[in-house]
Figure 1 (cartoon, rainbow, N blue to C red):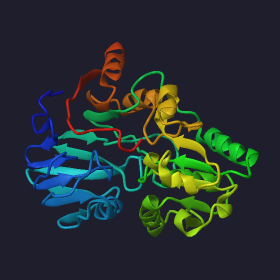
Figure 2: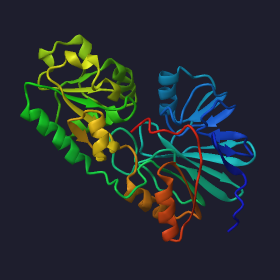
Figure 3: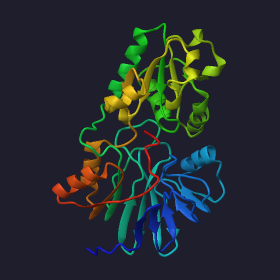
Figure 4: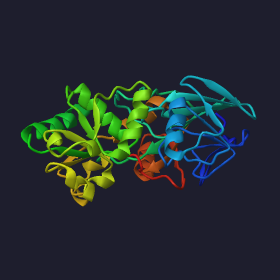
Length: 334
Protein backbone atom coordinates (compact mmCIF):
# COMPACT_ATOMS: atom_id res chain seq x y z
CA UNK A 1 0.00 0.00 0.00
CA UNK A 2 1.15 3.56 -0.69
CA UNK A 3 2.27 5.37 2.45
CA UNK A 4 1.90 8.85 1.02
CA UNK A 5 -1.41 10.18 2.41
CA UNK A 6 -0.05 13.68 1.79
CA UNK A 7 -3.59 14.95 1.19
CA UNK A 8 -4.42 14.64 4.90
CA UNK A 9 -2.13 16.56 7.20
CA UNK A 10 -2.18 16.81 11.02
CA UNK A 11 -1.36 20.37 12.04
CA UNK A 12 -1.17 21.81 15.57
CA UNK A 13 -4.63 23.37 15.21
CA UNK A 14 -6.48 20.48 13.58
CA UNK A 15 -6.54 17.94 10.76
CA UNK A 16 -6.05 19.70 7.42
CA UNK A 17 -7.68 18.19 4.32
CA UNK A 18 -5.29 19.66 1.79
CA UNK A 19 -7.11 19.24 -1.58
CA UNK A 20 -10.33 20.67 -0.11
CA UNK A 21 -8.54 23.28 2.01
CA UNK A 22 -10.79 22.54 4.97
CA UNK A 23 -10.22 21.31 8.53
CA UNK A 24 -11.57 18.72 10.94
CA UNK A 25 -12.25 20.07 14.46
CA UNK A 26 -9.95 23.10 14.13
CA UNK A 27 -9.18 24.93 17.37
CA UNK A 28 -9.16 28.29 15.59
CA UNK A 29 -11.58 29.91 13.14
CA UNK A 30 -11.17 28.74 9.53
CA UNK A 31 -13.03 29.22 6.26
CA UNK A 32 -14.47 25.69 6.27
CA UNK A 33 -14.65 23.29 9.22
CA UNK A 34 -15.91 19.71 9.50
CA UNK A 35 -16.94 19.25 13.14
CA UNK A 36 -17.31 15.88 14.87
CA UNK A 37 -19.37 17.01 17.89
CA UNK A 38 -20.33 19.97 20.03
CA UNK A 39 -17.87 19.91 22.95
CA UNK A 40 -15.76 23.03 23.21
CA UNK A 41 -12.49 21.21 22.61
CA UNK A 42 -13.75 20.20 19.15
CA UNK A 43 -16.29 22.89 18.19
CA UNK A 44 -16.15 26.66 18.22
CA UNK A 45 -17.76 29.64 16.57
CA UNK A 46 -16.30 31.91 13.92
CA UNK A 47 -15.92 29.50 10.99
CA UNK A 48 -17.02 30.66 7.58
CA UNK A 49 -18.78 27.33 7.01
CA UNK A 50 -19.45 24.56 9.55
CA UNK A 51 -20.33 21.06 8.35
CA UNK A 52 -21.79 18.80 11.05
CA UNK A 53 -24.82 16.70 11.92
CA UNK A 54 -28.06 18.65 12.50
CA UNK A 55 -27.88 17.86 16.22
CA UNK A 56 -24.32 19.16 16.52
CA UNK A 57 -25.26 22.32 14.65
CA UNK A 58 -28.16 22.87 17.07
CA UNK A 59 -25.80 22.38 20.02
CA UNK A 60 -23.31 24.83 18.53
CA UNK A 61 -26.04 27.41 17.99
CA UNK A 62 -27.07 27.07 21.64
CA UNK A 63 -23.57 27.03 23.12
CA UNK A 64 -21.68 29.39 20.83
CA UNK A 65 -24.51 31.47 19.32
CA UNK A 66 -23.35 30.54 15.85
CA UNK A 67 -25.50 29.44 12.91
CA UNK A 68 -24.08 31.33 9.92
CA UNK A 69 -22.66 28.99 7.30
CA UNK A 70 -24.17 25.89 8.95
CA UNK A 71 -24.30 22.88 6.61
CA UNK A 72 -26.14 19.84 8.04
CA UNK A 73 -25.06 16.29 7.14
CA UNK A 74 -27.03 13.27 8.34
CA UNK A 75 -25.56 9.97 9.47
CA UNK A 76 -24.60 7.88 6.46
CA UNK A 77 -24.74 10.89 4.15
CA UNK A 78 -21.75 11.63 1.89
CA UNK A 79 -20.90 15.13 0.74
CA UNK A 80 -18.50 16.16 -2.02
CA UNK A 81 -15.68 18.46 -1.00
CA UNK A 82 -13.39 20.35 -3.40
CA UNK A 83 -10.35 18.51 -4.71
CA UNK A 84 -12.09 15.16 -5.15
CA UNK A 85 -12.61 14.45 -1.44
CA UNK A 86 -15.75 12.72 -0.12
CA UNK A 87 -16.81 13.07 3.53
CA UNK A 88 -19.27 10.72 5.24
CA UNK A 89 -20.58 11.16 8.78
CA UNK A 90 -20.80 7.94 10.85
CA UNK A 91 -22.12 7.59 14.45
CA UNK A 92 -19.45 7.89 17.16
CA UNK A 93 -21.60 7.07 20.20
CA UNK A 94 -20.11 9.92 22.25
CA UNK A 95 -22.95 12.43 22.73
CA UNK A 96 -26.02 13.61 20.81
CA UNK A 97 -24.99 14.32 17.20
CA UNK A 98 -21.43 13.02 17.56
CA UNK A 99 -19.88 11.59 14.41
CA UNK A 100 -16.77 10.02 13.03
CA UNK A 101 -15.83 11.56 9.70
CA UNK A 102 -14.78 9.21 6.90
CA UNK A 103 -12.66 11.02 4.31
CA UNK A 104 -12.04 9.38 0.93
CA UNK A 105 -9.62 10.59 -1.72
CA UNK A 106 -7.77 8.83 -4.55
CA UNK A 107 -8.81 5.42 -3.26
CA UNK A 108 -7.60 6.09 0.29
CA UNK A 109 -9.82 6.15 3.37
CA UNK A 110 -9.17 8.12 6.57
CA UNK A 111 -11.45 8.15 9.62
CA UNK A 112 -11.26 10.93 12.20
CA UNK A 113 -13.20 9.69 15.22
CA UNK A 114 -13.37 12.83 17.31
CA UNK A 115 -14.39 11.37 20.69
CA UNK A 116 -16.19 8.03 20.91
CA UNK A 117 -17.37 5.30 23.24
CA UNK A 118 -18.44 1.70 22.70
CA UNK A 119 -21.05 1.39 25.49
CA UNK A 120 -24.76 1.64 24.75
CA UNK A 121 -26.19 5.10 25.39
CA UNK A 122 -29.92 5.90 25.24
CA UNK A 123 -29.19 9.46 24.10
CA UNK A 124 -27.28 8.78 20.86
CA UNK A 125 -26.71 6.13 18.16
CA UNK A 126 -23.91 3.60 18.83
CA UNK A 127 -20.40 3.75 17.43
CA UNK A 128 -19.93 2.00 14.09
CA UNK A 129 -16.52 0.42 13.44
CA UNK A 130 -15.61 1.20 9.82
CA UNK A 131 -12.61 -0.12 7.86
CA UNK A 132 -10.09 2.49 6.75
CA UNK A 133 -6.44 3.04 5.89
CA UNK A 134 -5.71 5.66 8.56
CA UNK A 135 -7.61 5.63 11.85
CA UNK A 136 -7.34 8.84 13.88
CA UNK A 137 -8.34 7.81 17.39
CA UNK A 138 -8.66 9.63 20.68
CA UNK A 139 -6.86 8.28 23.77
CA UNK A 140 -8.51 10.15 26.66
CA UNK A 141 -8.52 7.00 28.82
CA UNK A 142 -5.58 5.40 27.07
CA UNK A 143 -4.06 3.69 30.12
CA UNK A 144 -4.67 0.07 31.22
CA UNK A 145 -5.94 1.19 34.63
CA UNK A 146 -9.05 2.67 33.00
CA UNK A 147 -11.73 0.00 32.80
CA UNK A 148 -15.20 1.50 33.05
CA UNK A 149 -17.71 -0.56 35.07
CA UNK A 150 -21.18 -1.38 33.68
CA UNK A 151 -23.34 1.71 34.01
CA UNK A 152 -26.05 -0.42 35.63
CA UNK A 153 -23.73 -0.84 38.63
CA UNK A 154 -23.19 2.91 38.93
CA UNK A 155 -26.93 3.61 38.69
CA UNK A 156 -27.56 1.03 41.43
CA UNK A 157 -24.97 2.75 43.66
CA UNK A 158 -26.69 6.08 43.14
CA UNK A 159 -30.21 4.80 43.79
CA UNK A 160 -29.13 2.74 46.80
CA UNK A 161 -27.54 5.81 48.40
CA UNK A 162 -30.69 7.83 47.71
CA UNK A 163 -32.91 5.17 49.27
CA UNK A 164 -30.69 4.97 52.36
CA UNK A 165 -31.03 8.72 53.04
CA UNK A 166 -34.61 9.80 52.19
CA UNK A 167 -34.25 12.95 54.30
CA UNK A 168 -31.38 14.19 52.11
CA UNK A 169 -30.79 14.60 48.37
CA UNK A 170 -28.05 13.29 46.11
CA UNK A 171 -26.36 16.07 44.16
CA UNK A 172 -24.76 14.71 40.98
CA UNK A 173 -22.15 16.79 39.18
CA UNK A 174 -22.20 16.11 35.45
CA UNK A 175 -21.09 18.09 32.41
CA UNK A 176 -23.85 20.06 30.74
CA UNK A 177 -23.51 18.47 27.29
CA UNK A 178 -23.90 14.71 27.13
CA UNK A 179 -23.12 13.44 30.62
CA UNK A 180 -26.04 15.09 32.42
CA UNK A 181 -28.57 13.89 29.85
CA UNK A 182 -27.13 10.38 29.77
CA UNK A 183 -27.28 10.05 33.56
CA UNK A 184 -30.90 11.21 33.56
CA UNK A 185 -31.84 8.81 30.75
CA UNK A 186 -30.03 5.92 32.47
CA UNK A 187 -31.84 6.68 35.73
CA UNK A 188 -35.16 6.48 33.87
CA UNK A 189 -34.06 3.16 32.37
CA UNK A 190 -33.23 1.91 35.88
CA UNK A 191 -36.79 2.61 36.98
CA UNK A 192 -36.37 6.00 38.67
CA UNK A 193 -39.33 8.03 37.44
CA UNK A 194 -39.50 10.67 40.17
CA UNK A 195 -38.88 14.32 39.25
CA UNK A 196 -35.19 15.18 38.84
CA UNK A 197 -34.12 18.68 39.80
CA UNK A 198 -31.77 20.76 37.66
CA UNK A 199 -29.31 23.56 38.21
CA UNK A 200 -30.28 26.33 35.81
CA UNK A 201 -27.10 25.85 33.76
CA UNK A 202 -28.33 22.42 32.61
CA UNK A 203 -31.86 23.32 31.58
CA UNK A 204 -31.38 24.53 28.01
CA UNK A 205 -29.25 21.57 26.93
CA UNK A 206 -31.71 19.12 28.47
CA UNK A 207 -34.54 20.80 26.56
CA UNK A 208 -32.50 20.61 23.33
CA UNK A 209 -32.07 16.86 23.85
CA UNK A 210 -35.81 16.51 24.36
CA UNK A 211 -36.46 18.49 21.17
CA UNK A 212 -34.34 15.89 19.34
CA UNK A 213 -36.37 12.99 20.65
CA UNK A 214 -34.48 12.03 23.81
CA UNK A 215 -36.98 11.43 26.63
CA UNK A 216 -35.77 12.63 30.04
CA UNK A 217 -38.95 12.45 32.10
CA UNK A 218 -40.08 15.15 34.51
CA UNK A 219 -37.41 17.79 35.12
CA UNK A 220 -37.75 20.64 37.59
CA UNK A 221 -35.59 23.69 38.21
CA UNK A 222 -34.08 23.91 41.69
CA UNK A 223 -34.79 27.65 41.72
CA UNK A 224 -38.54 27.01 41.53
CA UNK A 225 -38.72 24.70 44.56
CA UNK A 226 -38.10 24.62 48.30
CA UNK A 227 -35.58 22.57 50.22
CA UNK A 228 -38.41 20.38 51.50
CA UNK A 229 -39.53 19.55 47.93
CA UNK A 230 -36.09 18.12 47.18
CA UNK A 231 -35.72 15.72 50.11
CA UNK A 232 -35.26 12.20 48.76
CA UNK A 233 -34.59 13.55 45.25
CA UNK A 234 -31.76 13.52 42.73
CA UNK A 235 -30.40 16.93 41.81
CA UNK A 236 -28.16 17.50 38.78
CA UNK A 237 -25.63 20.32 38.47
CA UNK A 238 -22.44 21.18 36.57
CA UNK A 239 -19.29 20.01 38.41
CA UNK A 240 -18.37 23.60 39.29
CA UNK A 241 -21.52 23.91 41.42
CA UNK A 242 -20.91 20.82 43.59
CA UNK A 243 -19.26 22.78 46.40
CA UNK A 244 -20.59 26.20 45.46
CA UNK A 245 -22.76 28.45 47.64
CA UNK A 246 -25.63 27.45 45.36
CA UNK A 247 -25.73 23.99 46.95
CA UNK A 248 -26.64 25.45 50.36
CA UNK A 249 -30.27 25.64 49.25
CA UNK A 250 -30.39 21.83 49.05
CA UNK A 251 -31.37 19.40 51.86
CA UNK A 252 -28.06 18.02 53.20
CA UNK A 253 -26.74 17.02 49.76
CA UNK A 254 -24.70 13.88 49.29
CA UNK A 255 -22.19 14.94 46.65
CA UNK A 256 -21.66 12.64 43.68
CA UNK A 257 -19.90 13.11 40.37
CA UNK A 258 -20.31 11.21 37.12
CA UNK A 259 -17.03 10.99 35.22
CA UNK A 260 -14.56 8.46 33.94
CA UNK A 261 -11.98 10.30 36.05
CA UNK A 262 -13.74 9.10 39.21
CA UNK A 263 -11.73 5.91 38.72
CA UNK A 264 -8.84 7.96 40.16
CA UNK A 265 -9.52 8.37 43.89
CA UNK A 266 -7.44 11.50 44.16
CA UNK A 267 -9.71 13.23 41.64
CA UNK A 268 -12.74 12.43 43.79
CA UNK A 269 -11.01 13.69 46.94
CA UNK A 270 -9.96 16.91 45.21
CA UNK A 271 -13.60 17.68 44.46
CA UNK A 272 -14.87 16.53 47.88
CA UNK A 273 -17.00 13.89 46.19
CA UNK A 274 -18.64 11.43 48.58
CA UNK A 275 -20.09 9.17 45.89
CA UNK A 276 -17.83 8.80 42.83
CA UNK A 277 -19.70 7.42 39.81
CA UNK A 278 -17.42 6.02 37.12
CA UNK A 279 -19.47 6.95 34.06
CA UNK A 280 -17.62 7.96 30.92
CA UNK A 281 -18.58 9.04 27.42
CA UNK A 282 -15.15 7.90 26.15
CA UNK A 283 -13.84 4.44 25.32
CA UNK A 284 -11.79 2.81 28.07
CA UNK A 285 -8.46 1.04 27.53
CA UNK A 286 -9.97 -2.27 26.46
CA UNK A 287 -12.40 -0.58 24.10
CA UNK A 288 -9.68 1.57 22.53
CA UNK A 289 -7.48 -1.43 21.80
CA UNK A 290 -10.45 -3.54 20.62
CA UNK A 291 -11.53 -0.77 18.26
CA UNK A 292 -8.06 -0.43 16.76
CA UNK A 293 -8.04 -4.19 16.17
CA UNK A 294 -11.55 -4.17 14.65
CA UNK A 295 -10.88 -1.27 12.30
CA UNK A 296 -7.54 -2.85 11.33
CA UNK A 297 -6.17 0.26 9.64
CA UNK A 298 -2.84 0.46 7.84
CA UNK A 299 -1.78 3.14 10.34
CA UNK A 300 -3.25 4.58 13.55
CA UNK A 301 -2.89 8.24 14.51
CA UNK A 302 -3.37 8.78 18.25
CA UNK A 303 -4.37 12.03 19.87
CA UNK A 304 -6.26 13.74 22.68
CA UNK A 305 -5.05 12.01 25.81
CA UNK A 306 -2.60 9.32 26.90
CA UNK A 307 -0.94 8.74 23.53
CA UNK A 308 2.24 7.04 24.77
CA UNK A 309 0.65 3.92 26.26
CA UNK A 310 -1.61 3.32 23.26
CA UNK A 311 1.30 3.95 20.90
CA UNK A 312 3.32 1.32 22.76
CA UNK A 313 0.40 -1.15 22.61
CA UNK A 314 0.26 -0.71 18.83
CA UNK A 315 4.00 -1.31 18.55
CA UNK A 316 3.77 -4.49 20.65
CA UNK A 317 0.94 -5.75 18.42
CA UNK A 318 2.77 -4.95 15.15
CA UNK A 319 0.42 -2.12 14.25
CA UNK A 320 1.72 1.06 12.66
CA UNK A 321 1.02 4.10 14.82
CA UNK A 322 2.10 7.65 15.52
CA UNK A 323 1.13 10.24 18.11
CA UNK A 324 -0.22 13.60 16.96
CA UNK A 325 0.55 16.91 18.66
CA UNK A 326 -2.73 18.80 18.42
CA UNK A 327 -3.23 21.86 20.63
CA UNK A 328 -6.38 22.99 22.39
CA UNK A 329 -7.73 19.53 23.19
CA UNK A 330 -8.85 19.16 26.81
CA UNK A 331 -11.15 16.80 28.70
CA UNK A 332 -14.01 19.31 28.65
CA UNK A 333 -16.63 16.63 28.47
CA UNK A 334 -15.53 13.99 30.98
